[in-house]
Length: 290
Image (cartoon, rainbow, N blue to C red):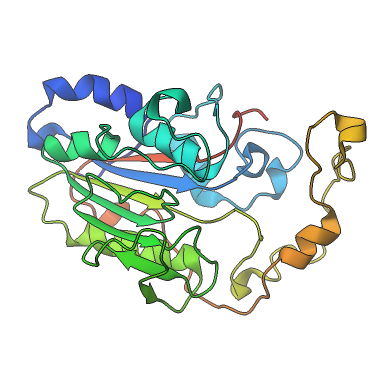
């Protein structure tokens, strides 16, 4: 019987328990879903002012059927350092990836390398944004750099590692749809004789904010409540050491709309033959209650 489980699985905890690995028949498949700059206020499961506006049926389903982490923190909330901590279970000062310019030492054990060594078939699709080549993945299809919302370039595990050079296949479509389709296709190709790890990494909701054209009327007629600090982007009033982006700047950086992909189904449980643990995390949210 198929079973869906949402678990609070993190890299550090997984590594701790891999030494006594269970027989293959008792080990779940793992689908790890990672969103980017996805504030908890927009998840729809943590309350806050936007909860009733969030159209996140599958996230709400995961929360209802699984476990919600409401006291989880990110200590270095930018893309690559956060991803490195999730992969290694180590703080930035231990894995030595502090900024976007740093590279992850490929000799450091990760969630993927340890699961692979213990009999898991491993896959990675979507945003990687780490300068060094992914380690421990039998298959990967990742964006060049941060990726693009529309018609992104994918680097395949069968290609020579390009480093910082743009290289790969440009695929037509909206990035969230493409990543979802690639991840589902790879999971369906597994033969069931070997447990798998699929890391499904979305570019969304990172700026410049964009969406597929099929959703352009989703909030027609809806007025969102404005936070008190909506126009508070300067250090003069909030004490920050940097100046935030104005609404006009965010609008300028938004990509033009015009891509119509197919609705993604990120929970393909009917096609998975064994127990699958699903883990959904935002990559750079400072806390579950922020």
